[in-house]
Length: 391
Image (cartoon, rainbow, N blue to C red; front, side):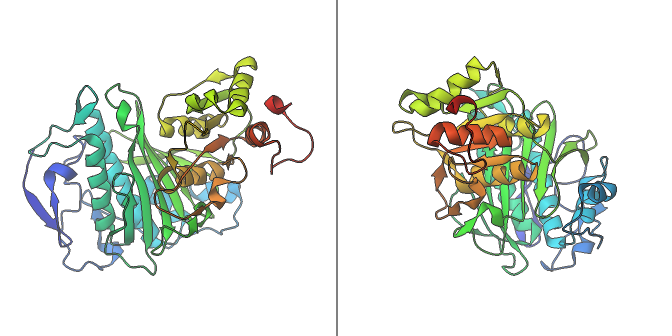
């Protein structure tokens, strides 16, 4: 593999960091150099091909039928986004992040792991895969020229990406959720949320304009939700390196499937213990991988189920609202599901600090009612009759 450094858009990008999958031959970023950082989006190229940004849009109150008539299963990522939103900057950001996810997928699949440490063996640079993913995502956001600030779970401080505040975005991401299970060959993923402007604190998850996750398993998928556009949408990475729209989810129904995180909290949280025992007695199917991305993604793909991660006096909440909980909450609720911290949707929680943590549940309406009633005696989603484990 070629090493060294090439300058794109005024910044040095190591080839060893941004090399692409074997399925493609062009470099990860456009081959043409751009001296003007604010050049027209229409002139940008990805993988040697023009990035097509059309002015087509749909009504923000469009029905699901009118939406799927335009944004069809089988569309490429660019085709889908061009039809789904008139915001060219948002299209550019989501396409750039898709390029990073494609590269991360290849690096994860080819990482050499010994014990609990995984390093990438390409070129001169040897990095743990989560650190490598972190670098790739920051570089993609800087390259997009539409991101003002970014921060990650690996680097929880605002980093200036040199994009505009007005008309631009701020992005928070978990570069490789589940990195501790890469060596066991379990599915892992990337999570990110996109907020308008230059703020990532003093905002809520409901303020996001988009959220997404990349899932690196037997298949590599890119799951996206965009504000005011119906549904949560899955794109599959094809052999030729393109993302193809393969599924949209608009309803999370009822079904006996549960993913219980932080089970050690049942030791001194009797209500959580009661809820888990209910799932067992009611013969729910246990589907828990130890990775938040696959556990939440299965709710969207299977269109049913419940994910819980509850705290207790001895097992404090560890999931970060900004990097994990709010973006996944956006994906779940856009898919027709619900989220809860026990009292409210996680999308209504104000993000006061970059490191703020919370307990959470994602699932269907009845499962969230059961979760809230069992742990706290009542549910904001339903008054009156109690259900399930709370009886």
